[in-house]
Image (cartoon, rainbow over all chains, first blue to last red; front, side, top):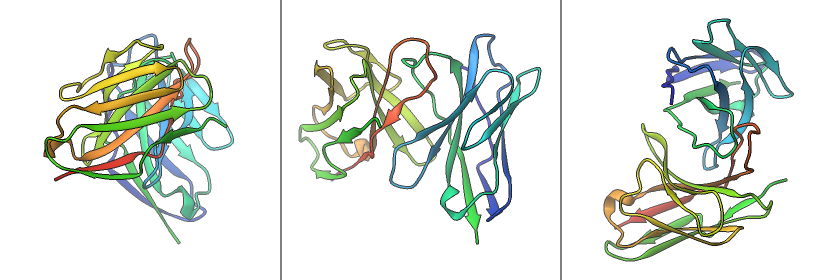
Length: 111
Length: 114
């Protein structure tokens, strides 16, 4: 499975856009990029998944450049409730596949 | 909505005890997973199961076993608990096939072994 590198932590303020970049230099051709969110004392929650270019849903956008060696999760206009740990995962697209979580990025949204 | 429930939120056991952690999902998912989460180490896969009575080792199966007698229930067993098994344990389930890599997680069980 491709190894990922992401910042340990980020601070932001309410109403700002938060962008978290994940590096995955050895991503394979059949790998997808998936992001999960975890609030304190809860299990992780799926946010978004993509293969290339841009994917957007009601929660976030995922930007993937042509070389796919990195990706950026964008959270528009964050609120205090977006304070969480965000994990970037890379692997084949299959719901039954094992997921390998790294350390994640701890995002703190301040008032 | 998919619901994954775990039998306890907090559990305290003594070294050498046999510990059962239960996980139940209500969406008829074929796949179920057990992870442990420790500070600085992220989530690590212990065991997973693709079907009833089937199980496969994850990345850190030592000291653990699992049981899946019914589709909705996946149990993690610590045969003889040790202090290094103090951790947060998370259960997850997912559909089979080539859908999105979406696993549904339970709230977790924080286990302390004294």
